[in-house]
Figure 1 (cartoon, one colour):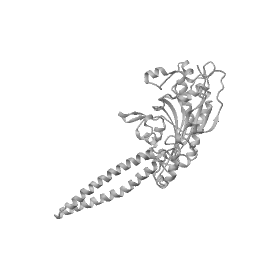
Figure 2: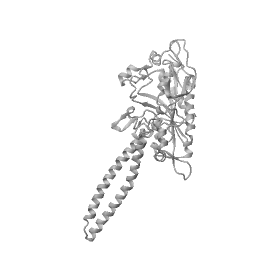
Figure 3: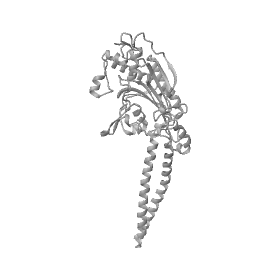
Figure 4: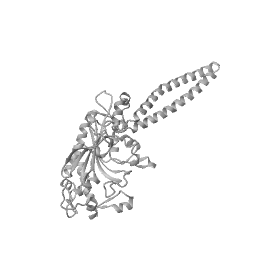
Length: 421
């Protein structure tokens, strides 16, 4: 949620910033509704005061035996006027709040302009894509040869874009998660297994509602939703809280299964487990003071890069264009790993600085010092490991000519087999 005081005080700056995201047109309507609301509030209060006075006159007239018909007529008139103004106020507030909740975050000035993947700026490439002396297989060919992925059985059980993982691939996933969690804990992130069923308030608070409803699985009978990322429940850990400055930064590492409808993804990445409805993920989440958000963003990115490097995966870091950002993000970096079967880099992880956007929606604040007024914290999130896509990158980049896959030593230390065949 954007700061309405900022929009009122400097609307042109806000419009210029949101124009980079194609979202400036709503500001004038928002301000007009806000102005009408502020006009109505004193008018309603004045009408209530006049009605109270007229009611008192009725009581006094009846007590003294005088004619109260004029005062009664005045009360009826004021009641009708008041009901009309209150109804208008409700409509104005509903429209204003809907517009305000739909506005994206103000982008970081350093985020590149543009609206598509092609507008992202590559910051660096790390590692060299493997040069195979043989025709490399894709992850599904490699895994199906060892009966480790079964898409057909999953389709019969659950429909398209689901998979059974089996055998060594399961052990590889558990090793990957265990290693990542250990690394993150060493970096000060408290491990968390959060609930994956969340209320609407949690999705609204992180900015996934109202805009991303088509991507979210809903359980209407229970008024719950399946979270598409652990970011959602992790952000809500301190919803409504006033933290002390000494408690910050607070950092979490959440493991969860994630669920996404992938609406609009028909025909895209239909082979294998690259784009599925259910996947596992280890997510980083941080609550920090506003002045530390930029530093924390770079810190989270460095952890993501370390994970990719220690897994021996060639990757590149891109600065995502403002028009391609999620609604809550002011700036986002993607780490894209090389996928040999596609001969291109594909997104494995991302990290976003959401400034105070989510904190305002979740009412998460901190007190800078004793006796000071609370301020909104800044929140950041970053994917440590998107398990399915990381398995793809590991299988394809570390495959051998005989169809086996050599597993990095860091994962063997956490229970992964040395070689998958």
